[in-house]
Length: 243
Ligand code: ADP
Image (cartoon, rainbow, N blue to C red; front, side, top):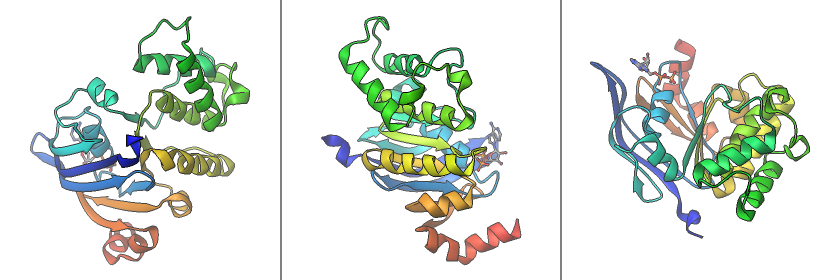
């Protein structure tokens, strides 16, 4: 399958708000199977990078995914190109069950009458429910789920939408230690066949699960490499300890 060749290639990405340059020409390459964490102090530009990739914020430069240029595209076009993101606050529909949320997300990608549930969507939804560990909760309203489970449901919604690039904004914020570990395992599983970028502050989580790390500072890439490499980088130490 051609998904084996997916990768995200960002070149010279630049975002300014009025006269203020929030992202100052960054390059970033993330290949499938490499669980990449994006870190940096508050205001470094992490969220702006994700917003620019997903078409929420106008940017210049180039963002290619799966051979498609995303800069200048509208959000729905970026979604159709296989890009999905989560926000810090889960955007599940609390009054609907787990399976209903997933059905709607599946339909959002390929509009069909929901009552018909064609076999392909059923399979995709069932598989996603298994992957994110919510099969036992299928008929519970999303509003009754634990905090961690809501985040997993949201990841499941990206899976059924067939997102091949997942951009996750602080997925373990507010989670218990057990939930963090389950989330890390989930990201590892998902990351084998999809390209995953995680914006995260939690250093312990990063040490346990990141394959590679890109450190942003003042809109530029300060350092990049394995966890051990960036942790040993004097520039990174200075930025974090000097903050
Ligand atoms: P991070 O996610 O790393 O904390 P952000 O991407 O949110 O950083 O912000 C990067 C910089 O851009 C910050 O200085 C922030 O104040 C600024 N910024 C973000 N969004 C806007 C906006 N809509 N208008 C003006 N400045 C913004």
